[in-house]
Amino acid sequence: MQDEQKNAIVAVRDRIDTIDNEILSLLKQRLTCAKEIGRLKSEEKRAKWDPLREREIYDRLFMENNDVFPREALRSIFHEIITTCRLSQKKAVVAFLGPEATFSHLAGVKYFGHAADYKAMETIDDVFAEVEKGRTGYGIVPVENSIEGAVFSTLDCFMKYKVQICGELRLEISHNLVCRSGNMADIQTVASHPQPLAQCREWLRKHLPSTPTLPVFSTGAAAQMAANNPNIGAIASSLAIKTYDLQVVVQGIEDYRGNTTRFLVIGKRSPSRSGHDRTSLLIGLLDQPGSLNAVLTALSEEDINLAKIESRPIKGKQWKYLFFLDMLGHIEDQRIAQGCARLQQMCSYFEWLGSYPQSDDSPPDA
Image 1: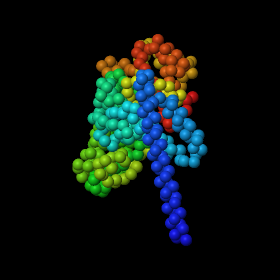
Image 2: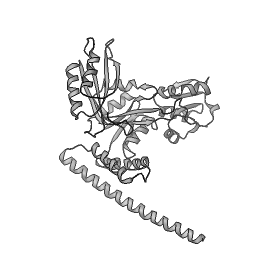
Image 3: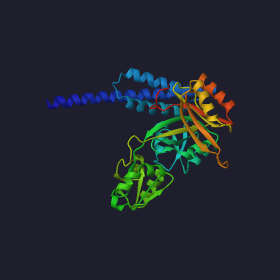
Image 4: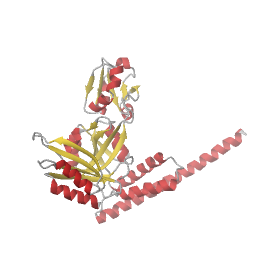
């Protein structure tokens, strides 16, 4: 009986090996096809990335799957396959707020896959500058957090640099308290980016009430400090634990569950329509009563769903503001194009920041 069971296991494992070989062969064929597509697009001077085509692939796969293979795992596997094949046409170089193992780094890997080249920058300003000057094809920057709100340094950079938004994603954030020893008693200072420190404020007050906090420019920098000093604890990502050989003191110390950060992918040119898009604008209002209401009325009359509005002061001009607007739809959609044309006539300043595919967990268009 034991021999029969052993032989059955061997037979199934042989079948798995055969399937794996078939998958590998098909992956190599898919990569060859992707390179050919890239060559043909280059001849026609067409963009390498077609968001609508990618969305159609996922929709077809989910339909063929019939919920047999876990949906999230299926999407993760094919995301890596699709991005690897796309990057074989032209490898992406992505700037992010470094050093390694920040949440921005994690977001970049989630969006572009492991095949891209990642370039760590010291500040969000530096990420924008790299993209504007063409030293990297893309940058990834945090723009808002579900608990702490807008990341103002990112919004301000859109007022300084000429880039376009190419995509977005949402990353669930879980904060870990880490240090070299894994022992809370060794921690004399807790370092992290100001946002994670704010998102863990109550936990720190309760469990480390007399321990000072040290704001630094990124969670990765905090992890580096903890790796070099046994008395520094860091609030950092799961990737930082492996990257800097740190020990977990406490997992999940954020004050609120469901903490999510929205990231934007910036580049030189927005992609074509995917059918599930968002358009971002930067506008200035005329100095007259009711100007903001007039803008909102115009958008409503064009049946445009306004997803976000945020104001930022104009540097060097007291009490003057620009407004960031997010609308559901693409600039190629007639209603969005008409709405933007109306705003150009009504506003003292108008800049289209980009139209791009919404993240997978965004609500459907209204």
